[in-house]
Length: 265
Image (cartoon, rainbow, N blue to C red; front, side):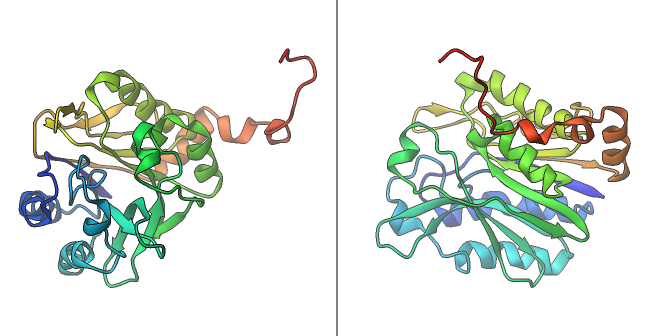
Protein backbone atom coordinates (compact mmCIF):
# COMPACT_ATOMS: atom_id res chain seq x y z
CA UNK A 1 0.00 0.00 0.00
CA UNK A 2 1.35 3.40 -0.92
CA UNK A 3 0.85 6.22 1.59
CA UNK A 4 1.75 9.91 1.60
CA UNK A 5 2.19 12.80 4.02
CA UNK A 6 2.16 16.43 2.99
CA UNK A 7 4.27 19.16 4.57
CA UNK A 8 3.12 22.67 3.82
CA UNK A 9 3.27 26.32 4.73
CA UNK A 10 -0.17 27.86 5.17
CA UNK A 11 -1.65 31.28 4.57
CA UNK A 12 -3.42 32.46 7.70
CA UNK A 13 -7.19 32.65 7.27
CA UNK A 14 -7.24 32.12 3.48
CA UNK A 15 -8.81 28.80 2.56
CA UNK A 16 -8.61 29.33 -1.19
CA UNK A 17 -4.88 30.07 -1.02
CA UNK A 18 -4.30 26.97 1.08
CA UNK A 19 -6.38 24.80 -1.27
CA UNK A 20 -4.31 26.10 -4.19
CA UNK A 21 -1.12 25.23 -2.34
CA UNK A 22 -2.30 21.77 -1.29
CA UNK A 23 -3.87 20.80 -4.62
CA UNK A 24 -0.71 20.02 -6.65
CA UNK A 25 0.74 18.02 -3.77
CA UNK A 26 -2.45 15.99 -3.36
CA UNK A 27 -2.50 15.50 -7.14
CA UNK A 28 1.11 14.31 -7.10
CA UNK A 29 0.40 11.81 -4.34
CA UNK A 30 -2.71 10.52 -6.11
CA UNK A 31 -1.02 10.17 -9.49
CA UNK A 32 1.72 8.15 -7.82
CA UNK A 33 -0.80 5.74 -6.36
CA UNK A 34 -1.15 6.88 -2.74
CA UNK A 35 -4.19 5.29 -1.09
CA UNK A 36 -3.94 7.29 2.12
CA UNK A 37 -2.83 10.94 2.27
CA UNK A 38 -2.36 12.98 5.46
CA UNK A 39 -2.41 16.79 5.62
CA UNK A 40 -1.38 18.98 8.59
CA UNK A 41 -3.43 20.31 11.49
CA UNK A 42 -5.72 23.19 10.40
CA UNK A 43 -4.22 23.02 6.92
CA UNK A 44 -7.06 25.00 5.36
CA UNK A 45 -6.90 28.04 7.66
CA UNK A 46 -3.38 27.99 9.03
CA UNK A 47 -2.75 27.29 12.69
CA UNK A 48 -2.49 30.94 13.82
CA UNK A 49 -5.81 32.13 12.41
CA UNK A 50 -7.78 34.53 14.56
CA UNK A 51 -11.50 34.20 13.84
CA UNK A 52 -12.07 30.51 14.50
CA UNK A 53 -15.87 30.62 14.46
CA UNK A 54 -16.04 32.40 11.09
CA UNK A 55 -13.62 29.89 9.56
CA UNK A 56 -15.19 26.80 11.16
CA UNK A 57 -17.03 24.16 9.13
CA UNK A 58 -19.35 21.28 9.95
CA UNK A 59 -17.38 18.65 8.06
CA UNK A 60 -19.61 18.76 4.98
CA UNK A 61 -18.66 22.17 3.65
CA UNK A 62 -15.99 23.71 1.44
CA UNK A 63 -13.02 21.70 2.71
CA UNK A 64 -14.88 18.42 2.47
CA UNK A 65 -15.87 19.13 -1.14
CA UNK A 66 -12.27 20.06 -1.99
CA UNK A 67 -10.91 16.79 -0.60
CA UNK A 68 -13.76 14.61 -1.88
CA UNK A 69 -12.92 15.57 -5.46
CA UNK A 70 -9.60 13.74 -5.15
CA UNK A 71 -10.87 10.78 -3.15
CA UNK A 72 -13.55 10.05 -5.76
CA UNK A 73 -11.38 10.75 -8.81
CA UNK A 74 -8.45 8.65 -7.59
CA UNK A 75 -10.16 6.10 -5.33
CA UNK A 76 -8.14 7.20 -2.31
CA UNK A 77 -8.55 8.51 1.25
CA UNK A 78 -7.44 11.80 2.83
CA UNK A 79 -7.09 12.94 6.44
CA UNK A 80 -6.85 16.67 7.04
CA UNK A 81 -7.10 19.09 9.95
CA UNK A 82 -9.80 21.79 10.15
CA UNK A 83 -11.76 23.91 12.63
CA UNK A 84 -15.07 22.18 13.33
CA UNK A 85 -18.12 24.18 14.33
CA UNK A 86 -20.01 22.82 17.34
CA UNK A 87 -23.73 23.09 18.00
CA UNK A 88 -23.08 25.92 20.46
CA UNK A 89 -22.46 29.33 18.86
CA UNK A 90 -18.87 30.45 19.29
CA UNK A 91 -17.51 27.06 20.37
CA UNK A 92 -15.31 25.04 18.02
CA UNK A 93 -13.22 21.87 17.94
CA UNK A 94 -9.73 21.28 16.57
CA UNK A 95 -10.56 18.31 14.36
CA UNK A 96 -9.43 15.98 11.61
CA UNK A 97 -11.76 14.87 8.85
CA UNK A 98 -11.35 11.50 7.18
CA UNK A 99 -12.67 11.55 3.63
CA UNK A 100 -12.97 8.18 1.92
CA UNK A 101 -14.39 8.14 -1.61
CA UNK A 102 -18.12 8.91 -1.45
CA UNK A 103 -18.61 7.72 2.12
CA UNK A 104 -19.95 9.97 4.86
CA UNK A 105 -17.15 12.04 6.37
CA UNK A 106 -15.70 10.78 9.66
CA UNK A 107 -14.33 13.20 12.26
CA UNK A 108 -11.88 13.00 15.15
CA UNK A 109 -11.78 15.84 17.70
CA UNK A 110 -8.55 16.67 19.51
CA UNK A 111 -8.69 15.49 23.13
CA UNK A 112 -5.44 16.95 24.47
CA UNK A 113 -5.15 20.68 23.87
CA UNK A 114 -1.79 22.46 23.99
CA UNK A 115 -1.31 25.70 25.92
CA UNK A 116 -3.52 28.52 24.63
CA UNK A 117 -5.57 26.04 22.58
CA UNK A 118 -7.58 25.55 25.77
CA UNK A 119 -8.92 29.06 25.21
CA UNK A 120 -9.71 28.42 21.52
CA UNK A 121 -11.20 24.94 21.35
CA UNK A 122 -13.36 22.53 23.30
CA UNK A 123 -12.00 19.06 23.93
CA UNK A 124 -12.98 15.95 22.06
CA UNK A 125 -14.03 12.95 24.11
CA UNK A 126 -13.70 9.87 21.88
CA UNK A 127 -11.05 7.85 20.11
CA UNK A 128 -11.93 6.22 16.79
CA UNK A 129 -10.48 3.56 14.50
CA UNK A 130 -11.68 3.61 10.89
CA UNK A 131 -11.45 1.11 8.06
CA UNK A 132 -9.41 2.27 5.09
CA UNK A 133 -9.80 -0.38 2.39
CA UNK A 134 -9.68 -3.05 5.08
CA UNK A 135 -6.79 -1.48 7.02
CA UNK A 136 -7.53 -0.12 10.49
CA UNK A 137 -6.55 3.55 10.59
CA UNK A 138 -6.71 6.15 13.37
CA UNK A 139 -6.17 9.90 13.69
CA UNK A 140 -4.43 11.98 16.35
CA UNK A 141 -3.51 15.66 16.38
CA UNK A 142 -0.14 17.28 17.13
CA UNK A 143 0.47 17.42 20.93
CA UNK A 144 -1.24 14.03 21.24
CA UNK A 145 1.86 12.36 19.78
CA UNK A 146 3.29 12.63 23.30
CA UNK A 147 0.44 10.71 24.89
CA UNK A 148 1.42 7.07 24.52
CA UNK A 149 -1.82 6.06 26.24
CA UNK A 150 -3.91 7.24 23.30
CA UNK A 151 -1.80 5.35 20.78
CA UNK A 152 -1.90 2.22 22.92
CA UNK A 153 -5.68 2.37 23.29
CA UNK A 154 -6.05 2.87 19.54
CA UNK A 155 -3.81 -0.14 18.95
CA UNK A 156 -5.88 -2.24 21.32
CA UNK A 157 -8.84 -1.04 19.28
CA UNK A 158 -7.25 -2.52 16.17
CA UNK A 159 -5.28 0.41 14.71
CA UNK A 160 -2.58 -0.59 12.23
CA UNK A 161 -1.77 2.93 11.02
CA UNK A 162 -1.86 5.99 13.28
CA UNK A 163 -1.90 9.36 11.52
CA UNK A 164 -0.78 12.57 13.19
CA UNK A 165 -1.85 15.91 11.71
CA UNK A 166 0.26 18.57 13.39
CA UNK A 167 1.40 22.15 13.77
CA UNK A 168 4.39 21.16 15.90
CA UNK A 169 6.77 23.93 16.89
CA UNK A 170 10.48 24.05 16.15
CA UNK A 171 11.33 24.74 19.80
CA UNK A 172 10.19 21.24 20.73
CA UNK A 173 11.14 19.45 17.54
CA UNK A 174 13.15 16.95 19.58
CA UNK A 175 9.89 15.71 21.11
CA UNK A 176 8.26 15.28 17.69
CA UNK A 177 11.30 13.39 16.41
CA UNK A 178 11.36 10.94 19.31
CA UNK A 179 7.63 10.55 19.89
CA UNK A 180 6.69 9.76 16.28
CA UNK A 181 9.23 6.95 16.28
CA UNK A 182 8.35 5.71 19.76
CA UNK A 183 4.62 5.44 19.02
CA UNK A 184 5.39 3.27 16.00
CA UNK A 185 7.86 1.00 17.81
CA UNK A 186 5.94 0.42 21.02
CA UNK A 187 2.73 -0.44 19.14
CA UNK A 188 4.22 -2.23 16.14
CA UNK A 189 2.29 0.05 13.80
CA UNK A 190 2.99 2.53 11.01
CA UNK A 191 2.93 6.24 11.84
CA UNK A 192 2.13 8.88 9.23
CA UNK A 193 3.01 12.32 10.61
CA UNK A 194 2.18 15.50 8.68
CA UNK A 195 3.38 18.87 9.95
CA UNK A 196 3.53 22.54 9.01
CA UNK A 197 6.88 24.02 7.99
CA UNK A 198 8.35 27.52 7.97
CA UNK A 199 6.44 29.88 10.29
CA UNK A 200 3.15 31.65 10.90
CA UNK A 201 2.84 34.93 12.76
CA UNK A 202 6.21 34.38 14.46
CA UNK A 203 5.57 30.74 15.39
CA UNK A 204 8.20 28.49 13.77
CA UNK A 205 7.32 24.90 12.93
CA UNK A 206 9.75 21.99 12.94
CA UNK A 207 8.66 20.31 9.71
CA UNK A 208 9.93 16.71 9.82
CA UNK A 209 6.77 15.34 8.21
CA UNK A 210 7.50 11.65 7.97
CA UNK A 211 6.48 8.06 7.52
CA UNK A 212 7.72 5.71 10.25
CA UNK A 213 7.79 1.93 10.00
CA UNK A 214 6.91 -0.62 12.67
CA UNK A 215 10.49 -0.68 13.99
CA UNK A 216 10.43 3.05 14.66
CA UNK A 217 12.58 3.82 11.61
CA UNK A 218 11.89 6.90 9.48
CA UNK A 219 11.49 5.58 5.94
CA UNK A 220 10.49 8.88 4.28
CA UNK A 221 10.78 12.47 5.47
CA UNK A 222 10.16 15.93 4.05
CA UNK A 223 13.16 18.24 3.92
CA UNK A 224 11.63 21.43 2.48
CA UNK A 225 8.51 23.57 2.44
CA UNK A 226 5.47 22.35 0.50
CA UNK A 227 6.59 18.80 -0.16
CA UNK A 228 4.84 15.47 -0.44
CA UNK A 229 6.70 12.33 0.66
CA UNK A 230 5.54 8.79 -0.05
CA UNK A 231 6.39 5.23 0.85
CA UNK A 232 5.18 1.73 0.16
CA UNK A 233 4.18 -0.06 3.34
CA UNK A 234 3.44 -3.74 3.91
CA UNK A 235 0.74 -4.37 6.50
CA UNK A 236 2.26 -7.82 7.14
CA UNK A 237 5.21 -6.01 8.73
CA UNK A 238 2.92 -5.03 11.61
CA UNK A 239 2.32 -8.59 12.69
CA UNK A 240 5.93 -9.64 12.12
CA UNK A 241 7.09 -6.82 14.39
CA UNK A 242 4.50 -7.58 17.04
CA UNK A 243 5.84 -11.13 17.14
CA UNK A 244 9.45 -9.91 17.13
CA UNK A 245 8.88 -7.63 20.15
CA UNK A 246 5.58 -8.70 21.77
CA UNK A 247 4.78 -5.58 23.79
CA UNK A 248 1.07 -5.89 23.10
CA UNK A 249 0.93 -9.57 23.95
CA UNK A 250 2.87 -9.25 27.21
CA UNK A 251 1.37 -6.08 28.63
CA UNK A 252 -0.31 -6.71 31.99
CA UNK A 253 -3.58 -4.91 31.45
CA UNK A 254 -4.73 -5.66 35.00
CA UNK A 255 -2.21 -3.07 36.20
CA UNK A 256 -3.50 -0.25 34.04
CA UNK A 257 -5.20 2.38 36.17
CA UNK A 258 -4.26 0.59 39.40
CA UNK A 259 -3.13 2.56 42.45
CA UNK A 260 -0.03 1.35 44.28
CA UNK A 261 0.16 1.70 48.06
CA UNK A 262 3.97 1.70 48.11
CA UNK A 263 4.30 4.82 45.90
CA UNK A 264 4.85 7.90 48.03
CA UNK A 265 2.47 10.75 47.33
